[in-house]
Length: 450
Image (cartoon, rainbow, N blue to C red; front, top):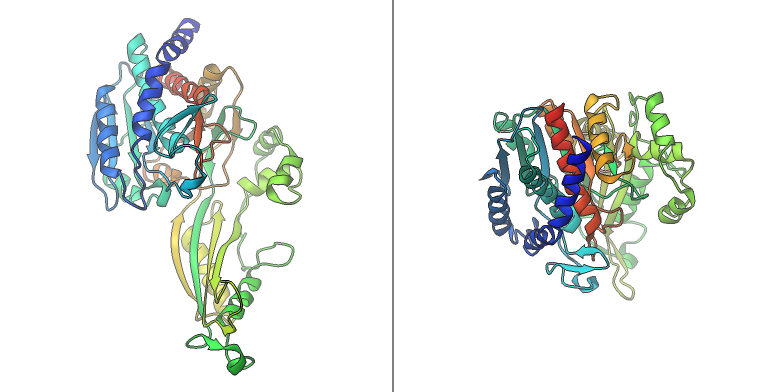
């Protein structure tokens, strides 16, 4: 893009500011809560209609769960075709009493739009649509665009993989791009190239056949609660090392380029220690732990009695929820097998292990040419050099597009670092939202030039 075109895009977005805010309000007013199946059909219809208005041919296609909305735009020029991702589903608004304004009545306060889904992900996915409209108005060429918007991201994208596999021709593209999540905590524009995978499980154990009186049976009956404590203690040493045999086998070290990159990331160890509840190490140690190492986390334990006053009982059953964040070459199936073998070897062969969620890790190489193109487009839109993360510690459905479609995948974040997604008073800064429109516009134009 020329300097004149860059300025024209920014002026056009600024001139359409109020309309862009109204468009987002319309989507945010529809609950679209996956777990409760509330507002799903209404949101799908509204999103498809907005895509048609922007010149896309929109389809709401069925899956085994919530529909996927696919919009295809013919473009106004040639170039590498992007497949762009977003999700229309949102988290529940609980606890509703903690919201300053109702979660599905968008409110503008101090330069931020507050509503459930503002940053995660309706504001970010809508930015792509408005970018296409902006380029069309200005006559700036862009290649054919396919937009895929799923409705189950907040519950693990269970239907996404089978849908993508069954619709390869419909989703044909040359590159993949998505905008999701918060910016880096420095609030600088952010690019990330991949993610850790995830295996979440429920582990159930039984002691005696039923709960028993601790006076009549204490010292004799087998407690499900104590067995669970012993099981959990077998998984982890006091200094935090995971004791599952083979847990870190075959994991490569970060490359020298990756180490140089993460050493340059903005990092405040004092702030990190405050948030984490303890020492977080150097910048290298901190970021390597979050991007390049697997983890085992205890999410919660349920057993026995925890109400007011005493209840002298020996609990028969106990449940624990665990998750593992995975890095290549780990797979959820392999890690589940390691966990089950560990439990059998340590006297817990009777534990009932139920997988709850599984997604492999995925990452695009730092030296891929698409990385430079995205970096330059985002820098032009924001006027600042973006933070580039080789991976994020969380999990996104990148593997579906990378492994099933063979696409290089790059993500950005159009929401402010403190967007409070999944929490009360979720928000997106208007400035970040408008800048996201520009970032998508510049990327699409760059793909036409490429």
